[in-house]
Image 1: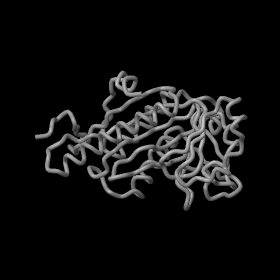
Image 2: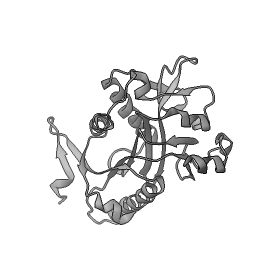
Image 3: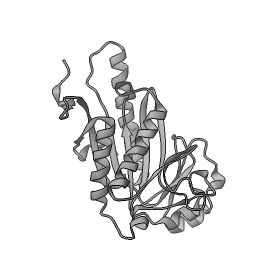
Image 4: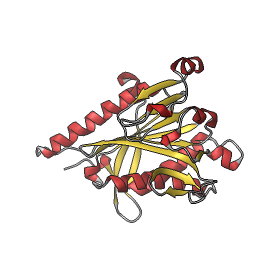
Length: 256
């Protein structure tokens, strides 16, 4: 019988799965990527044991963090969308990685909420389109709680403001994931208090005719990251029907 600690019930009596939550603060991109890979491998191994007929506990993870300045580009991304030389990146303290997610090039930096769900979708639903739309909805709902109306842009993953107005359309959240054996990794980057000048050094997500924005820019004031994270976590928990269980942060430091 599965342990009760891996489930919770809401006021309607519906079960929610536990997600082990690592809230890591500001961390170098490569350290967190390596940690993701290790957690991903644990979830896959757990799945394989279950498929072999062993009774295993549900296993899911969530990482929230910020990164120092870094550009990342997906498997099939176009390096011509990087508009700065390696030497100039070094001088400005910007890292650069080609990684194993979908999507093109994007920027991560301080003031940006980065969220990496590592979920076994066999225990939720096996539909990547639905997964991406729910990730978008976590940010759309969060923005609505701060008084900002956001939505989707046809044919472009992510969260947008004024998506139907070519002259005003601007992206506030980029999404790029990897899914193998129905286990996810990577995730979303939500511009909260992000320094948007770094996006001028790339063609964000390979899109040339639309801008980028942040919650700070839209509201005209800096928003406490912990406040935004708390609201986003509530939407993530609601939409995916999970309950995040804070993890021992020392585990990250032992792995990474």
